Structures are given as structure tokens and as C-alpha cells.
Image (cartoon, rainbow, N blue to C red):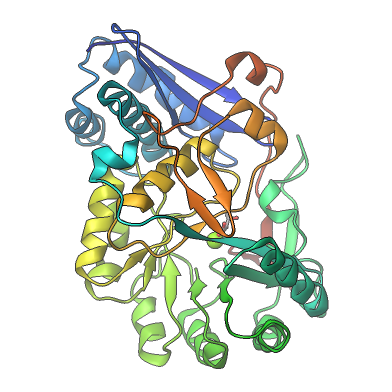
Length: 401
Ligand code: CS2
Ligand code: MG
């Protein structure tokens, strides 16, 4: 089965998405997600100018060889732009292979290891009371696991607390600037979780995202202070570049640690997994280079008692979510899947067979990954330049976002 054409689509049904569509001489097509929030067009150029010409005439069935050809064959390896571009192609090829086999993707990966995937939703509030209420609303909707973020006294709204941070920034404007104080945050976070446990008890799993903002010793202290509230995980406690820093965190706290949403190859996670410095690896199909490397990463993690917890914010398209759901349905060491939902417009452009009910995700059972792309509808939502916010300390120093 030969690849006859590859098209790249950029659309913005609520936010920007990059979609790869591969056509074959047997009439089968497949689609993949190549979205890199805030740097979408760089991936489009990498695909159109450099990868698409390499694909025409290749055997669509040779997924592994194509992945190696694009990764090793480039000489210049790794990096978010490269890996998102390769991921878009890889997902589309797995979609084609599963359609050709007449199977849902999870069957090709090894078959179902479970009946449903626990997912976590996002609770947020301007202050503790609002966050507590938001957790209650998600529990009422059936969620068994909730990520909790709230505003910090003395600071304007921070990441994840006002519902806007994950929506990029104002269209065609400079990135929004947020303000950060580590000492105010460290005093506040334990109070937030104390209040949530007091109001909602111990049956709900609680998660928290620090968004890379602490140093290792600060993260160690936070992990210790949160121990009484038994978190499911503490996410991105330090900048992901600080691999050795995780040793220090690990030595000081039993709060489970998650990291990896910004990783793009297995090499970013090697030390953390091999030394069991983390409990959950957050790598996701689009930013890790596709389904082919995600299988290897998951198996490698499984050898070291690390479970999966794939990044699933709304800035990855439903194709990425569906790929993660199929992977999670198969992977023996599944932990949890992030789920932040999609706008109606996004779901109309990317209709899919996956579903969400009672705090769990389910894959579609038809051939492929089960997500379609409505090209005509997508044309109504042209690309809109948008940035993630940036973050500064109170004295103006640029800080991690
Ligand atoms: C976040 C994301 O979902 C998460 O855990 O950290 O909202 C992240 O900021 C965005 O996906 C960045 O594009
Ligand atoms: Mg995160």
C-alpha cells in the first residue's frame, strides 16, 4: 500500500490544531495530530517543506521504518517541532494500518488490558472556596479524580486558576503576563488541599500541577507539606530540565511525582524512569513523536514501576486524545488519563467514537483510532496566532510558565 499524498491542515475551532492526512493508493486514509501550542506554524513548515516530500511513494504499512527514517534519518534529532511533525505522520499511519486490519487501534497494540480508563478533570477557583466548589461539581459529574488549582492570596489569577491560562492568550496580541511568588504559593497550597479534603473526604483522587515553578528543595518541601492530603500526584514540580533535581525531591517526600508533558523523546525520561525518581510519566502521543515511541516509553516505564498519565489538555486535538485512549486501553502499566474536554466547535470538526462517562474514558471499537476530520467545516475556522502566557516574579524577573 503506497502513500500517494500527504496534506497538512491548520484550523482554529476554538483553538489552533495542526492535522496530518495521509492518502494511499488503496483508497484508505489516516489522520494524525501535529499540534504544538503557540508554535503551530513551525511544525507545518517542517512537515510541508521537509517531511512530506520524503513520504510520497513509501509503503504505508512500514510504520517503524518510516519512523526511523524521519527520526534517525534527519541527523538533527529530537525537539518539540521535529517530534510533533513525526507524531502527526505516525498516528496517521497507525490509523491506516488499523483500518486495513479492520480493527480498533488498541487491538493492534495487544488488545484491551482493562474495561475503562480513569481520567481526571480540572477544578479551579479564584480562591479556596471557589476551588472547593469546583471539585464538588466534578464529583457530582462522576469524576473519581480531580486536579485542583486555585488563586493565591496577594497575587492576580495564576495558571489553571481562572480557566483562561490553558486557552492561550488574546488573539494577535502579545502573551499575557502572569505574576508569581513562590513563598506565597508554598504557604497557600497545603491550605487548599486541607480544605478540599475537609469538604469532600478521601474517596476522590486529588492531583496538583505546579507548572515547573519551584526549585528542587522548594518542591521537596511542598511534597512533604502535602503528604497529609494523600495526593494521587504532584505534577511538574520543577523545570523539566532539572532531571537530577528529582533525586532531591524523591529523598524528601512520599508524595507521588509526575512529569513529562514537555518531554519529546525517551531520552528525556531515561534517568527519571531508570532510577524510579518519578511515579507517572506524562508523555503524550503528539509531543513524544507518535504511537510508535509511546509504546516503547510505556514498556520501559513498566519495567521500573512507573505508570502512564498522558498529557491531555485541550490544546492537543481529539486525534491525540483518541490515540492516548487506545494506548491506555492496552498498556499494562496505565495510571490515569488527563481529560479537560473540548469546545463544541472542536468536536464538530473532529467527530470521534471515543466517549467519556462517569469519570472514565472509552475507545471506539470500530477500525482505526476512530476520529474523523471535517475538512469543509475546518475551513470556516482559520488559524489565529495565539501564545501561551509568560510568567514573572514580583520584581519583574522572567520565570517558568
Ligand atoms: C497543563 C497544560 O494540562 C496540563 O497539565 O500543564 O495546560 C499545558 O500548560 C498546556 O497543554 C500547554 O500547551
Ligand atoms: Mg501540566
